[in-house]
Image (tube, rainbow, N blue to C red; front, side, top):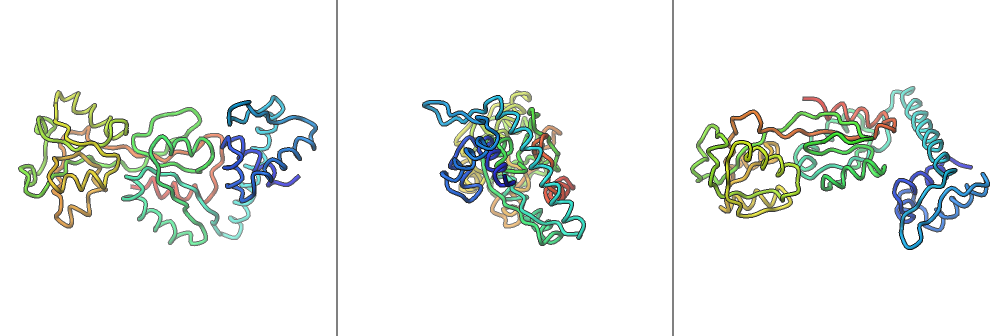
Length: 294
């Protein structure tokens, strides 16, 4: 029995997919099936059962014990590798990170650059996703770290806070707000607004603050990404509320005016997620340290 067999088994359970487990381990689906059968033959126990008519893979009683202990062995093996790297003062390996677009596009490049300059033997594998998929990627083991806005406590996940973002108003340079030093929520009443889609955490937070302040705005458009919202504001659809890091380029170029909001509520928390039942690799720990710095 090889360590690779244990990893394939655990990946299959985490991902609930023979094809994804095969892809992660650079083998065929047939090879995954053969590895599972070899493990069951070796221990003379059925470890998995397929649910008829569904793609779900279910652990048997013996499989639950095997998965738990196999995961312990894999974590210990990962720690062994990290410890040996530490002996020679080398931090290496790949850190898989799933990140929401708004943070990934505007805040990650400088953080990744700093990390790579300090640890050139390591690599950051960064993937952009929506919030729900980032959380799912971390929980199912597809990513070692996740980065999202407005992180909420969830069983099985640890949250490390990154520096929060200010939320600011953006408008065209010729808008009446463009020369203002700051705005209050009440100043936004009745304004045409370009929003994030309703199910995004940032949109929910903005709606909650406006509702608490008793402010109604006029929705003219909803988009699922920051770049589209910025372009809509530039051409005069209306104004929008955005995280400050995402509009610094436009502010510098003069294509958008950026105005601060004076109330303390206008901030966007950002957090790093990882599973509480996994030991982070040394490379991932170093990246988290960079992400949480102010």
